[in-house]
Image (cartoon, rainbow, N blue to C red; front, side):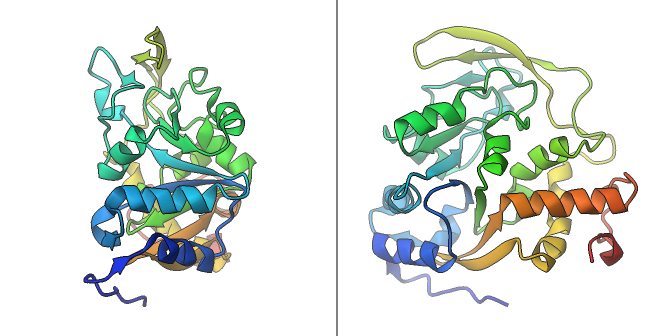
Length: 274
């Protein structure tokens, strides 16, 4: 069991980068970060200093740093996503990322992200977001994290915050995950253009929020070495290999003959993955 660290310590940017390196996190691939700033503790330069450290580390060899900036709470508003608006459905780190001009925000109506790195590579990475019909579609940035062999970094949070797993469920054809009727959505782009499209939100008929059950996969992920543990500041952190997680979930689904492994709150039987 990893113990919490001393919350009186103030971490420098170099110490944060050293922690990332200890988890063998790549610097040439996309890495999506879900985080709890409260658990990270004090960093030199505050949240902006933490973002600086992550940008410097993850983009050093051509990689991409991705910070989720979701706006799914705006489904009932006239504008679902205003790319220039820093208000999101998430926490403070998303706002900090959006206010930093080094990043470019994707135009996914419900599950946008701020992406940092080489401008040409970022533009290629985010270019298809208005063509998908779900927030985590396999053709979206989430699918490209898998395509490019990227990672999900869970900083002080668990797999119930691992939005990438929604994408995996779509990739492996898991049923009962998207609403049958799409929502009308409106995106205001960076140049002020108004674009209307449709998105099928995540929805199941057996629980209000299926992502709360994503934590059931963690034991199987660990069995196959998908997770490396470490810290970012004081926050216990999981560095998760996107490709291995997808392979593990697909194995569980196939061995279960297509039965939904999240249908109940019971643990996933070991025979489905060992």
